[in-house]
Length: 67
Image 1: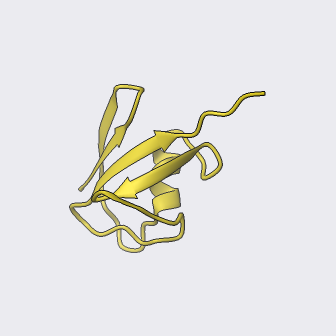
Image 2: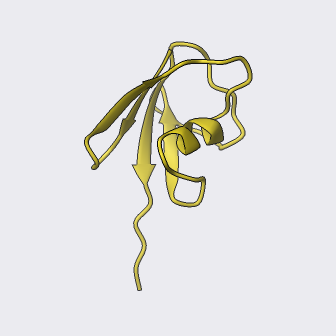
């Protein structure tokens, strides 16, 4: 299982881990894309194409922009 917490939104989920799952896949599973959020996997900021290991803890950080 992958534990996911979306910071600032009060969302916490567990997602079933599958072989080959990436950070981008996890972001999509909780309603984000790689342009609207970044992720920290086990405390480390990661790239969207990085594979996620079983048991990972992922913090999703929504990107805020304005003009």
